[in-house]
Length: 498
Image 1 (cartoon, helix red, strand yellow):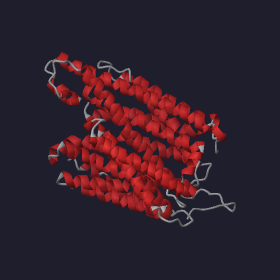
Image 2 (cartoon, rainbow, N blue to C red):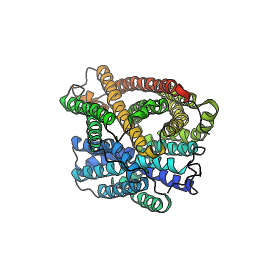
Image 3 (tube, one colour):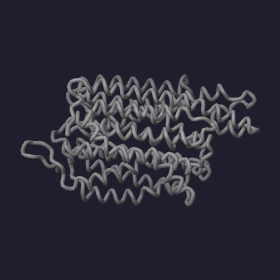
Image 4 (tube, rainbow, N blue to C red):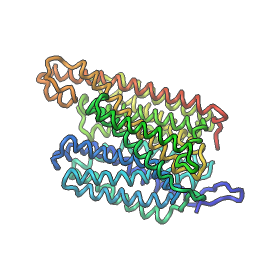
């Protein structure tokens, strides 16, 4: 169990850095899986004969299960044990990966992805919750900085690893990769990680669980359906409204029940509210902007998936180089100023990316990615530390689950809204000589373009849309910085625990 000093304060675990390495390994394999699959979609489509709808469900099954269960699994970890949640999550994720690698039909792969989503939902909040238990307040900022760096690294490494595997092996290799990593992580967690859970026994908040699942699945499903069906479609509005109504009912129930799954009084703490809100806005900016920007690298600059992955790597390198300085910066200028400064740099990077053109080459892209990585490396570790420092340690799992849920919302909303802006601008600026229907994707439009001039015009139209989305992402990042500055400065939230 977690060690306590005579005064009742948490002291660092003697094997804390080894445990942190294992937690980061478990987190990395989950985050890699998202971006690796995107690279493998063309190969999966060809091998399994999957339809467009089936491909979408391969992606959405994971996202929906993950978003729907994060609050519940965070509460489960606090109640029944964070080590137990980690082990169950890793077993489910690793087992799901094995089934996915051997899938012979699209349905088998969809079901396997759903099982992996359950495992990821148990893993993601538990890694940060365990970290909270094994590090004292002095070392926790450094540990969270390392955790945040790994989280950012997963985004950039996915396309590189996935592209490399697909050049030499079959599509299932992107899932086989998870098997040895999962086995090592399961063994190490079983041997190293101490068990910890909430000391008081609480009743299971079954209505809260059900309402949170309906809320999360409804909202996320409605949002991710926007690119295919449009904002006015019943396929979007019905689940979205159902999710929002369930969310209102969830808040009302949690406020009146004696033992809520989510203690809403946490939002009275400006440090908690500021960190959660700014994280959601950053997810909106990053998820929407950079998801679309990878298409620019491939469709406009002509890079292969592997080449595009390597050209996103400066973002990860920048994060890794800057992150170790985040605790020192926050100790010197305070938490609010550090988060605001980092998010401003992030916004500046997205702004720089918005100036790319069809003929600009890779130089402006490199500058923008380095700035984005530096902003993330400065702001996100400090934001995570502010968030986890604002909650009782015994509720670390549910708080981490809430943060991950809102980040899923933000990412999905960013892809939907910014993707809609790109689509509208792209369709408006396409040459009138192209046939109807090609405005649905740049790939179709490029296939229909019969001359070099038409190809250039299609790429110009797409770059115009990308520029608008990146400007909106930059505005969201700066808004997140302002929000964090305002909220975290209230009631002494700029105090630094060091």
